[in-house]
Image 1 (spheres, rainbow, N blue to C red):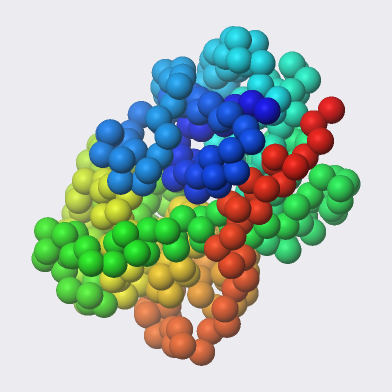
Image 2 (image 1 turned 60 degrees about the horizontal axis):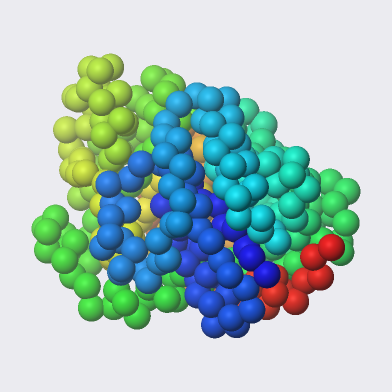
Length: 364
């Protein structure tokens, strides 16, 4: 059996690492990694692969950035060539990026079985490119590995056969447990940025719906600056977002926050683990906040991880008014995490279950 795993962004490489490790343990299939090149990431160096024991890609398609149509189209063209060359039994895609969509579409056109990890997540907002990507990939997939009962229900409600759906838990929790021991004695990030455990707030901001909308961008950064007048706020910020802030003359709106360059995976893990509050628009960071048992505020209109909100770990706020966002920050800081319920994201065995089910599946 030959499996082609299609990845395009750093989080997908991290998620795939635990599944690839389990596939290798079983030893009944050959896995080939394809990097579409969707995201060029300076942090994806050789050290990144070595630290996380990641398999290096056999193919790097080098697609790079561009409009959604251009990027997806170029991926499909180059992926088709790889699939025709390798003739895999099946392909694996992760999450909801353009790489996920391109892989799913090419597999369907070439009548290759496809496997979608993190299936069934829904924000119910079709204006998000990620929502389109995940919905289409789910409906094209032959095997759908879902992280939560809610995601399984979403798939069944959309008419997808129960026989295709497997509730396995969240591979990100597997990743978290794996990195917990690796990062236990790290203090480099705290020392580097002059931080003390539990004495600072960590914020991220990258989603296009926020960074490309001037009103939202101003509201979020102003609220963070208001928070920075009472607490130490650190923001690892992508250069593209910082450029937008400067281009729109918003420098005065972040005088009280510490903006730093993007950090590597292990450094981010350390910053999350030791923070007092996490503020973000990232789906992955929302979950990581919960794994670290740190309260979180998400400045978005919706989230795929609704159980984080309903259980009280995550506070959702519409990012249109700085004062409203700021009040939500203050409310989240009062969270008594010891009294909050535990959420079932699996027992850290999702990747093991996925690998077992892949090699036992009868591909026709």
